[in-house]
Length: 206
Image (cartoon, rainbow, N blue to C red):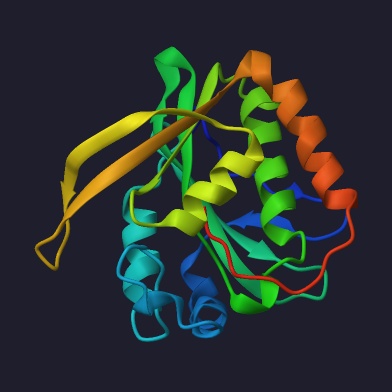
């Protein structure tokens, strides 16, 4: 089977390797998402230890080379510390979204998220020849919005009442994007961030 986003392993130079999600990752996902209690945040789609299996089945149900691909993030030491996905893939227009990203609390300020984004953006622009990569997040998720902006993504706009959530609330979705012509500058910025000293700080999600 061939398509736009074929399963691939993306290996960073220091912090993380991204590998395609499989059902066998369930125990590691359950352990990773317990670190920081990510599933308790109402404005994210991160799993909890109790819902890890359901979350994996949902991600795999929408995974196809022409629709999307979910990665798990593995540190060089071997432990899984999070996940990120290619979503809303649009092969004719060479566009996709990076989203459904979450990382364990122990990965904060470690370079894991930055290198994961560098790998996924690099694959999208340099290998898939995308013309644009989108990022979307809940309007209330200010940490995520700040993290996206630090990547160098530009604000496209806000889709108001874009999604009805299970709790009955409505999600206003903030949309950002990076264009292929902007990628060289964004790549340089991410590489610069990875070279900077790191210390403790708040957990951020994109």
